[in-house]
Image 1: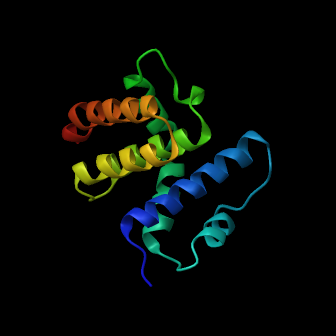
Image 2: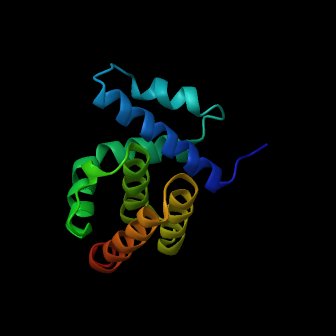
Length: 136
């Protein structure tokens, strides 16, 4: 059975979370192998989103940090970092409707994080939409 885009985003978040843990623990990994372990259907949306998010990570972190009030993305938990980066990447670098990118990120945050992080994500993505995405 084909997964919904929401389910695919959940898989993307898990992959990005895993890679974040590997990096922090200095564990060697192969990005294609991590994707393959989590992407049984070989869905190109997952592959493109994961690779794009990682490829643009420094840029995404700079943009996210610009709009986090008195915070840095590095202070957030690993799941939260994955959601913030994935959502910002989708908002800035894909053809997904902007409101869908924001809503999907917030829904993941509500499911995997606490209310304060969801509100922070909503505010940051709104700022990115208004200040960054519309200027491209």
